[in-house]
Length: 160
Image (tube, helix red, strand yellow):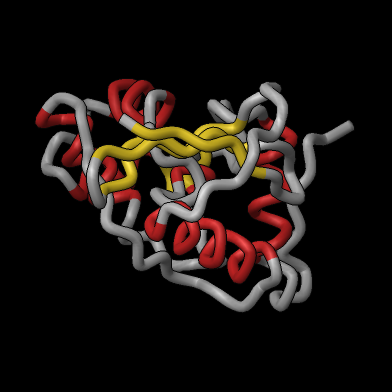
């Protein structure tokens, strides 16, 4: 297992990989570590920079997912939500033919190992509320605002 902590406009990010596969991308309070010349991490950093600069809408990073069959099913559906769009937890539950699993979808989203790359920030409550985000709710707002920046009238806030 290899790891690196990088900087981003939303705080430090810890990357973890095994071989040629990114396993985890999580926001962290840990300090930046010396950059490596690992090809995978260089690619991830380049794609994240392009994303935060508004130049990248779909990540092309080899990933390795560890989780239950249900979690992986949820994450793959979440990964299909287009840049700049939001869907409801209920929509994801229905899309996996399990309409009663709305809370389980939320729980799976809460343990998404690849924040930003698997865009769980695009999943919101039916009421329109921005509920929960493993990286911090303020980051969810910032990610949604970034993706909505070219869509007039599409603004997100925490309501305070």
